[in-house]
Length: 295
Length: 305
Image (cartoon, rainbow over all chains, first blue to last red; front, side, top):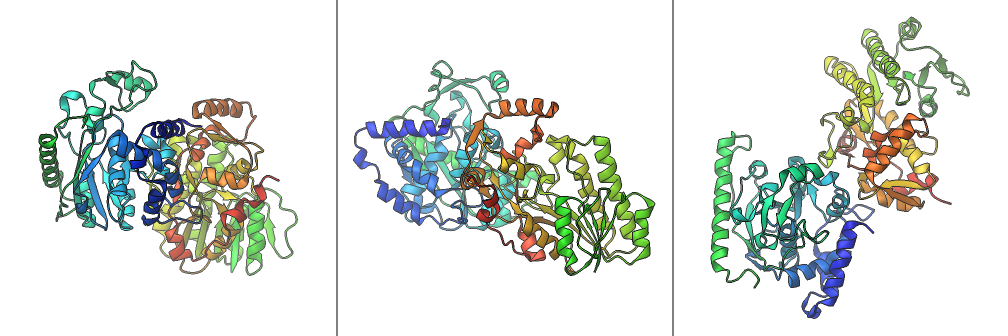
């Protein structure tokens, strides 16, 4: 059994032990939702990008448990997610990308009809053992413009975090402040005339409060970051286990942009900034509405 | 059609010759002997760089050249690879342009793109050829591909075709992917499961024949199967697998290669580590030779008893 497999096993045990299992979606219901996702499977049960619904079937129950029981996710504005191709632009936080997983699950479990977002992953992922095949089977793809273009061509919803690691690995002092956005997503949106759905997650920042990112150590170990949290690296193995904060996921109204995809950076950046400002406003509003981090 | 076929003495070359010989007049050129050829098939046992090779072009009008004579054996010294692959190809290109051959087909390889962690999922024909970045010994193979590409741009009147097939696999083939599938216990890299495409040897022969059709030109990616996770292929093969961590496997192969205990150079591990999926839509549009073998057919000869 590999590392990822072990993690999923652990989750399964946790979900069995926890009470109120009845409230989590039943396997039959999950299965029915999985059936309704449009896929482009080849003769061997995987799509050309390596997405394998059978694999999802195996890990679905524990992940649904994470969504409904552990993070007690609440999603708002799912009606803003269109049926056709779109770019879901999210804020990234929390050291480990549970926020991505939860955004994907919210559209899968709470939306009708269900959608399965394909997210764009960082460049170090394909070279990371265990993580790379796990994410590939889950339908996540290396974030190159070419990959994104192809998936959008087949009408998929693509989840992108334009902050990338800058957002994911930021420290506690910078919580809920959007970091610098990349502009690749905007160029693609302009080129393919794709609506952008600004999406924010409230609650992921507090799952692993980080005091310091030890860049020297990260470099030495070949990690993208080395966060020092209350438990990491002091508790080996489970140091980055997220705190069970309450996730609130807001999907904003779709934004459409017109213009030349090959414009100069300044012009593109202007449009990017308007998305970023909208998201920051959504974050601020969400924080104001929230009464407590854990419920 | 009168066709000059380089590399005819190889196992694959001989099969191509047999197939083309049914309809065309084939003239083989290879330094190695080539026994057991069918009657009427001419074989010149000469080096392509020799003057006598030029005579073949001077004597008869040649309609097409199929260039299979690229050495892929990395045990051969780099000087030797340079001379045989690059100088050999350049000489051949001189004959083709000088004697007004109408068609030139190179059997290159999908490996020239190189399996890289940063590859876009689908590799289009225009993608840069990165193979030698991580595997310097492949540079002569990449250089041959490039030389023929630049020839393609310089000579619009000559239909130049570069075929880049994904891993060629077949019961008679002795390349790395076929040898890998033939192992009794198949090692894999722990925590990696790339998408892999295979090209059936027989399909490829049909595709080379198809590339001879007038109007077919340019670079064309080829594959018989859709991309499939490696683990799924190995499951069909049904042999025991052994997952090994990459650093360990690499260190082992580097030493084993140095002491001539293995025929797999360590950088080839990248093929079972990273995706290198070829976009074969051009082949469907231009070549129009649909592959006939399924994954099950291709893997059949390698299956555990």
